[in-house]
Amino acid sequence: MKKLLFISVLGLMSCNRNAPQAHPPVGGVLSKSDLDISKNRMKNLNNVERIHMQHWIDGQSVKYYQMPLNYWVSAEGFNQRERRKDDTFISYSYDLYDFDQTKIYDHPIERREAKFGHFEELKAVEDALRHIHDGEEVTLLVPSSLAYGTYGDEKKIDNDVPLIIKLKAL
Image (cartoon, rainbow, N blue to C red; front, side, top):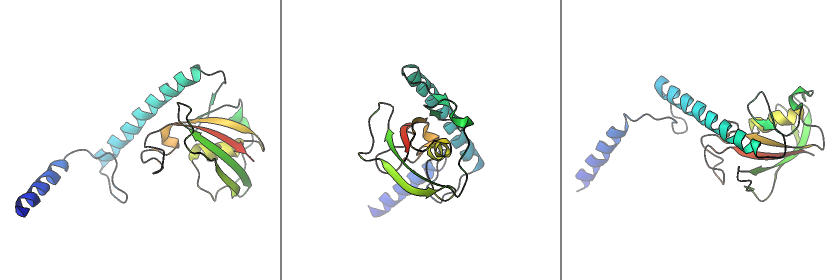
């Protein structure tokens, strides 16, 4: 019986080898064709999310402006402001929402005296922090590729979830 079970498992594993794997396990290696599949998947997902976000924006009373990094912000002329430089400090907090405007975490994510160039943050948040004025509050609309991507945050945010981020410079 054990031999039959072992052979069955080996047979199933060999059948799955030919299936395209878009995302390897941590530490895994992808072939060129697997990388192309993953790249095309993210490109298509980004297009779908952009359309969904634009429809959501069209139904809002607040105006949103697209940033070069591929997210939207609720402040006009935001990307024309002077950028904060590396090695400068900033304190900030933000709340995360899904596009049903449901708050994901009860408490905001907060950082005190974070030093640019030396902290890891969501790409859209870090980019927005470079432009935000002290005490200012802005809303960011962020596609999943700039949020928690394919893996989610391994807590409450699932994979491939675009986010609304309410960001405040303290």
